[in-house]
Image (cartoon, rainbow, N blue to C red; front, top):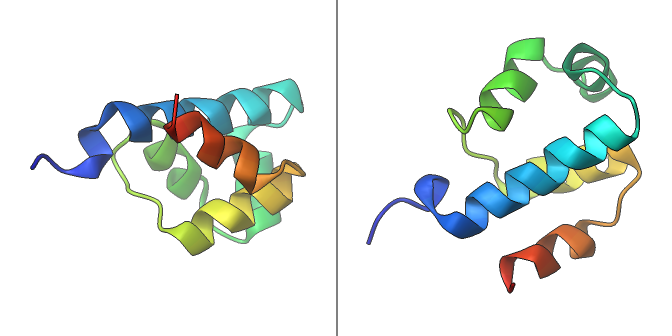
Length: 77
C-alpha cells in the first residue's frame, strides 16, 4: 500500500484546506501565526511535503473557521 500522503484522498483534503485559506484571504504566514507554528509548517503541508495528523487538521480547520467534517466528506468523493 502506498503512503497516504501520496493518495488521491490526501491530495483532495489538502486542496480543500488550501482553497479554504485562500477563500478567507489568509496568507500562509497569517495562518501559521494563528496556529503558533513556523510558516514552513503551512507551506510544507500545502506542498504535500509534510503529513498532517488528525489533531493538526482540526486545529487548522478551527483557525480557518471551517467545519472539519466538510473536509472529511471530500475523502469519500
